[in-house]
Image (cartoon, rainbow, N blue to C red; front, side):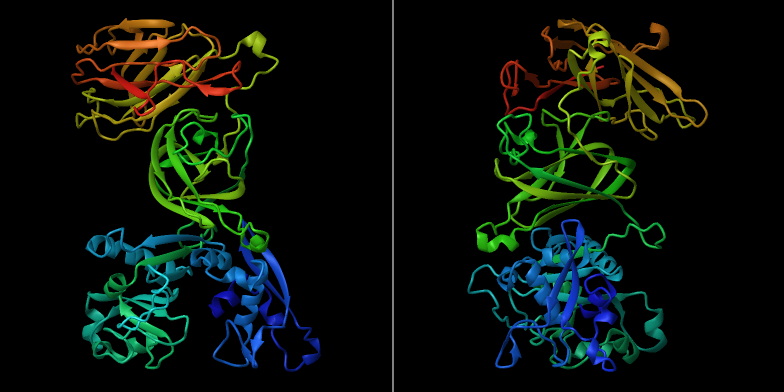
Amino acid sequence: MGNFCLNWKVIPDWKDQEWDKEKPETYAGIFHFQFWRFGQWVDVVIDDRLPTVNGELVYCHSNDRNEFWSALVEKAYAKMCGCYEGLDGGNTADALVDFTGGISEPVDLIENGYKNEEEKLHDLFERVLKVHSRGGLISCSIRAMTAQDMEAKLACGLVKGHAYAVTDVRKVRLGHGLLAFFKSDKLSMIRMRNPWGQREWNGPWSDSSEEWKNVSKSERERMGVTVQDDGEFWMTFDDFIANFTDLILCRLINTSYLSLHKTWEEAVMRGSWSRHDDPLRNRAGGCSNNKHSFLQNPQYVFDVKKPSDEVLVCLQQKDRRATLREGRGENLAIGFDIQRVELNRTYRMHAVQQKVGGSIFINSRSVFLRIELTQGRYVIIPTTFNAGLEGEFLLRVFADVPTDCKELMLDEPPRTCWSGMCGYPSLVTQVHVVQADGLAGQDSDRVSDPYVIIRCEGDKVRSAVCQNTRSPNFNTKGLFYRKKANRPISIEIYNHNVLKDGFLGQVTVPAEQGRIQKTLHLKDKGGENDNDLPEEFMVHSVTPMCPGLVAPKEAHIISPPPPCLMVVFSRHPYFDHNDGLQIVWKWPYNPSQIDEQQFLI
């Protein structure tokens, strides 16, 4: 940790702060440190008075009696947290973030099945190795289930409830001489340090175990193997998984375009949960258990622009430990949901959509999720667990390409001076194209690369291209705020080509108000019926004839034989401006059922 602090921002200008034997008169007893807090590096200045008892440091200290940097860093950190008491029982993941500005990912080694699945175990070791090789910090511990278990010494030499620091991760060659060099098999190993500076693992590969005879002297020297009770020890990754229960990976996020390693695009959003009597202005709705207020929370939209991308999401609340003495030292239980929405959504959600991921809810300072998402648009909803709680938060989103993350502020299209002349939307329709079956194979291998376009009143939504298929799963949504309720909605399917895209078919969905029931066929351009699909289906749609409504569409599957195109029109709530701007439903609605029904085209 010492080298880490010196090489990064925690101890800025450390050479200037070092004791100068040649110029002792320059020493002023003042020290300057920095810690990452809530999106920025915070300066902390302290003097050199340290708490002692009988001439010995009370808290953190070095083995060298003339080395004080660790005690000084601890004092500065305690000052930022309010007092030394604020450090008692702290969260290791939060501390790692404070010292790095990175993001911490807690890993439960029991629930995630690493002990029983070899492939998962291998993938986890590669992740740990990558984080360590790129300068990240790693901590691990054995969970203490009761107060009596805390600091309990196990027969294997390990201690429960201690935050062990991972100091090295590597693949070790076994054998001696050239034979070892050409061996392809390597042993996955990890080195840890007990914070006490003593008591080590006494199992296989401990300091004086027989297993080290299988490793050459040069390899042991490269690994820094020592035979002394200094609290540092090696063990295989298999033994590590078998004995430890929790792992924390603190990644240093690389956003530099000049780096040889993977770089991330970061979006940072600041927000708050705040109470208000007006549901449209309330931003403290609580988690999804609070069905009537959940969507009143802040909402942040972002795009995944690659066919598939790994996305990191970190939600952090403002630390309350500094106000411990004032009775506000407990962190809120926080978390977030991620929902897939329409590709053209620009206004706040008022109906729950497809949930694709989410964090746990915990009263930690931060929660984290690493998730693989397909191309599309998504909304993050950060929440407290209970409704009505207030606090500030920081949302960080990382992806391989820019996500264009921003907060959704408006509930509906704003009225302007031109609304009276050009009109204002009287209803809104969501179209969900789910899939198609039995499309024409226009390419040489008798398949296609289809995509779908949904058009409505001059607006359009285009899906991603589905490769080499006649039965694409589009899963594409569009949301249209409509001024002319009698205009139909057009759905077109094309085959993607390098020079010119090929037309596969289209359908026009009528949009009359009231109840309609029609049989529709997929057609060629111009309304010709040469390529009509013979299968029929029944469409039942409902559009209330009331101003200011968000129009629902209902449909029921009737004998869905392939080939066909599956489309979903979703019901939506609307705002009744004469009823205190409450979100209400004007249709028979059972909240226990999914609020979408499908019909086939």
